[in-house]
Length: 330
Image (cartoon, rainbow, N blue to C red; front, side):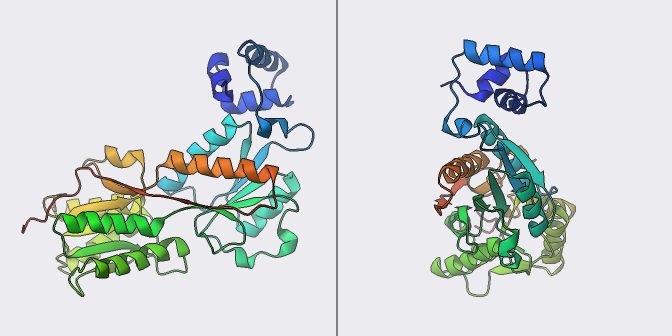
């Protein structure tokens, strides 16, 4: 099946340019448009149902309410999501405004659907702000919003990490990833950490959950420094995200702790970047491409049937790399 990606490669232009040309957008120069249409015809391109639905009735745009441009996991997801939606003929519009302001903007632009991230509080949104007849999907925090949701089984990810470390012989494990806020995306991880520690029979009182101010590199660095300065004897750490992991590694290096000889580390976020760290990171989570494809699929289904509410839970996996090993004492 010929896709927009195939046409873009043949024409030497971006996905977005092909998408606009196929929709006869005035934003594409006429000679470029004709060149793209000619290639599409030669390759036998047939628009899918989503693309056909754009004719006259749809804007061909998907609005994304983005919580942060600084966190690596979110940036990677946005890139993959943009690619997945462009292959289906859509243009992504990004807003970093507050949720209510972003929804109002997308209502005025008449986007075909809106993606919201689960750590944003939908309870503060009035019904009058919501764009009429526009499906909304959230990524994360299934059950905390009235809209369709694609979510990772975050708690299961932490359970996989704990089981892996316990199987290596670790009994004293710290979790870095509690921002001390009402964030359901993080709360489910912490609850799983506490519950699974008990199920595994890990030493009572030996599991530590480190409070942090946020989820950035500096927060991971300060949390790890706190552990070290307090003389904590944890032999393994589970990090709540890739940015925290970067900070943890920096603090460990300053203290001349070797990974995994002195301390093992498992990072949440199944991102390719983790394999390129100085010590390739053992990771838990769902691959970014899997998440983006799931979100794109649900969006297309909802545009066709906006009254339908869907909840999709994605199964995480454990990727074992060089950052975990049996504790030195064993």
